[in-house]
Length: 446
Ligand SMILES: Cc1cc2nc3c(=O)[nH]c(=O)nc-3n(C[C@H](O)[C@H](O)[C@H](O)COP(=O)(O)OP(=O)(O)OC[C@H]3O[C@@H](n4cnc5c(N)ncnc54)[C@H](O)[C@@H]3O)c2cc1C
Image (spheres, rainbow, N blue to C red):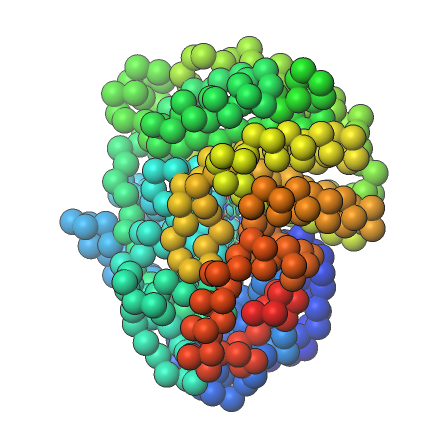
């Protein structure tokens, strides 16, 4: 175990915070730290964008808890320590015909981080969040006791989506799903505007995976034009039909390209993003309507192909805005957000998904549409995001805490009100108030 004061940040590199960083390598080291320290939070691989994994005074870096403990090939149950990376699970179990039941858009996240954020994948509409596929988890509590719990327990419900604020997850047992190949059978729909994009996502509800890339610079009649991707795990028969002779599992790829230094923030401007979007939409439309096979890595983790891509936003860092709006009010709110963004600032990334109902007490999802946008950190963009928050609040929506670096308490309370009240009470019962604290919990009064 080593400790040292460092200035750290999340994936968005905004904000930065000085904290004592303690690298943990043994599960047994965690409980004594909980007894001894206040203002501490767990950190996995630092892929949350904002201040969720920045300790108020102390941060426990758990990447050293990286052992896989047991696997049952009959049930697909896998017991692992909390610092195990999703990438390592895929590398170890894809060749044996298993895949994690839910994955986010990067594989460089830990099991503890995925449970704490109750991450959602492109299959949330059918599979729920990551927490729905956890058999049990073992947690070091604020008073230093260690408890194992499963679905049905209040502690479990508060920990799934609880952003590390109930204690430190030491290990968990996950249920993996069986797959026949490492390929995804993908069908693309080119949607000419927002209505068509939403209709295509609704229609793709029967698909295992569904997600839309939005051209957020398109205006007027083309506002919200999108490529909607439906996907299924390809069977051996699919492979024989679409790519005879291809290997059962495609190469993992990724990581070959890297951004070597912080690019000037100007690199991503209206012209460059607009040109990219036009080209991307045009190519997607040309291939629409036909099934194609895509390897698991580019399908689930396209951004992992460019190492350190967070540096393209320049040294000031960037902000991701991810909201979810209840279904009945989604159309009007999404149109308003896209109009606002098209006129104010280009977002390089714009992703739309249809989510199902949530899992844990503080889990982000609710039945509705979630839109994700990226902006360089700047005073003008901070003001723009406040305007977007107002639209989200008026429509009864909320923001994703794993992406958040700047929402106000008012926005948070409007989005999470009753859940936050219940969560605070659970934290009080656990003695977590003050003892377990992150930048995020301080900012939002949790
Ligand atoms: C490129 C990219 C794409 C993404 N795509 C998606 C997506 O599609 N869907 C989605 O839902 N999310 C997505 N995310 C967000 C990411 O999945 C979450 O932020 C996840 O929590 C990061 O895991 P981590 O191990 O890096 O955790 P960290 O960022 O280190 O921590 C995140 C939170 O988990 C807590 N935590 C970490 N480990 C533990 C532990 N052992 N015990 C208790 N609490 C712990 C921390 O306290 C913190 O609150 C994406 C992020 C990136 C960078």
